[in-house]
Structure formats: C-alpha cells, structure tokens
Amino acid sequence: MANQLLSTVAYRDSLPEGYARPEHDRPRLADVRTDTNIPLIDLASPDRHRVIAEIDQACRTYGFFQVINHGISEELLEKVMAVGLEFFRLPPEEKAKLYSDEPSKKIRLSTSFNVRKETVHNWRDYLRLHCHPLEEFVPDWPSHPETFKEIISVYCREVRLLGLRLLGAISLGLGLEEVYVEKVLGEQEQHMAVNYYPRCPEPDLTYGLPKHTDPNALTILLMDPHVSGLQVLRDGAKWIAVHPRPNALVINLGDQLQALSNGAYKSVWHRAVVNAEQERLSVASFLCPCNSAVIGPAPKLVGDGEDPVYRSYTYDEYYKRFWSRNLDQEHCLELFRSQD
Image 1 (cartoon, rainbow, N blue to C red):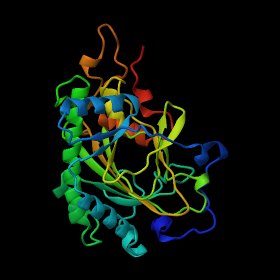
Image 2: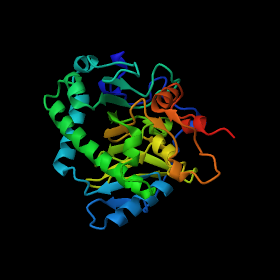
Image 3: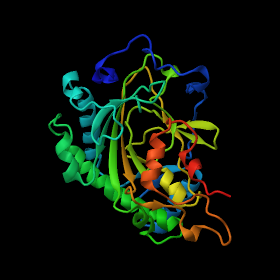
Image 4: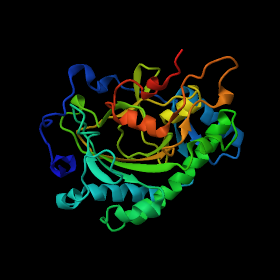
C-alpha cells in the first residue's frame, strides 16, 4: 500500500519495524574506504584509442567508471535532479495514484526493492519507468510535476545515445567489431529508477539497497551532486565510497556484459547506504537486452579447445531468474555457468 512509502512519513528517532538488518549484515560504515584511483574517463579526449583502452582497463579491474564531457549538459542534469526531488515531495494522495508492489509493472512508484518477497526492507522509495520507445510509455508517466515528462524525456534520449556510444567502445576494447555488443543485445529496452533515500535515524542498521549486481547490460547513474551513498566492492573484500564529481556520470557494467566478455569484464557488486543528515536522490538508467536476445560469450573470446565460462540463454530467462531471488544472494550469473 502507498502508506508504506518512506517519503510520506518522517521517522525521527528510530527505524520502524522491519528495516533493521541482523548484526552480520550491516553496512559497517566505519570500515568503508576511499579510493583515489577510481577511473575517471574524459569522453571528449581527441585520442579515441586511449579512451577505449581506459574503458577496457576499467571494465577489467573495477567493473565501473565515471565519465566527464559525456555530452549531456550540466543544465539538464540539474533539471533532472530537481524534478525528481519535486516528485517525491508531492502530496501522498498524488503519489498513491502510481503506487504498486507488482515487480512486472512497467510504470510504478514503490518502496524498498521487492516488498512481496523480502524479509527485511530497504530505506528507499523509487519511481520505476520504462523509457523506450518513449512514445509508448510517456503518456502513462507522472503528470505532476508539470515539467516531469518533458525533462525526463529529453534526458532519456540523451542517455540512450551515450549508452550506445559506450557499448561501441566496450566492443572495441574486447577486440570485437564496434557494433557487436549492440547487435547481440537487439532492440534494447531502457528503464529508469528514480531513487529517493530519506534521512535515516539509524543508518548503521540498514541499507538504501544491499549489495547486488545489475541484471542488465549497462547502467548509467546520475548521482546526487552533494551527498554520497554509492559504494562498490573491490577485490571481493573491501567497500569503497564513490563520491560525486561535478557533472560526472557513473557507468556500471551489468551481468550481461560479464557474460558476453566470457568473464573478462566484471559486473560490479555495489550497494547504497543512507545517512542521518541529508536526503539523497539518484537516477539510474538501464540499457537492457530485448527479451528474446540470446546472450553468451562472444566466440572470439573463447580460447581454442576451451569451454565458454557461461552457457547461452535468453535475457527473458535470466531476468525472471534474477527477480525470483533475493537481491543480495550469490551472483545470478553463477546459475548460468557452463557445465563441465
């Protein structure tokens, strides 16, 4: 029910029931480190070969990177963040019109991650939108704030162009034809999650989102420019904070690029943490294979006489398996490893 939305109630002193994680599964914020070597790639560099090499190295070592001079204006980024916050500040009765806890619904406002399955909730509300083709979905997007549809539509178009450009660079970095990944993924769907993390009275006890990988191909994240919250796992052992950079976008590799690369590239484990001082907003755009796309390691990346790391599967099969599990279980790709 819509009364579960965190953005409609202020919790000042303690977490409500159902949000506190067990002792072994808490964020341990004091142990989080800062990494000054997080890849930052200037897409306006005239040396395209260097850009491709930097993206390739980041995909192999970190599984994510940040980009600047990406072609999306600072003004548009600011408008997207402003209209997103304005949406979550709408009256409860207005937000209730969009509320649903049905994961398959293409346009919905909800809370946590999957309230139908999970036993512990996450400190997050989110607006989920399907974005491609725009003309099919925009009529059902929120009508308020009045500028929402216009601003988010423009952003979706520009993000899609950026995503396809990055997929071309990723293909080249793997030694494949520039259009290889885009062709395999088919007519890609595009989704968006506008995430709202309210101030939390006990941030050491809960998550905005627990650790997970993204099931899609590529995620482009617009972070709150003033508040940190994204953390990524390095070397399977330590969490590092990803601090906002002015006008930068964070690029996360999803599970499908790990599979296509035969495991050479890493789909990064990441999580969202919360804080007691400031609310935070982020906007995640997901490029997803079409449901019928057959995903598997590129033949060129499988050595002679070797078995591919992963078997082939349809994205529809993968996505259904992903949503049938808890978010923080073992990597879903482990279920698609080739059998010896």
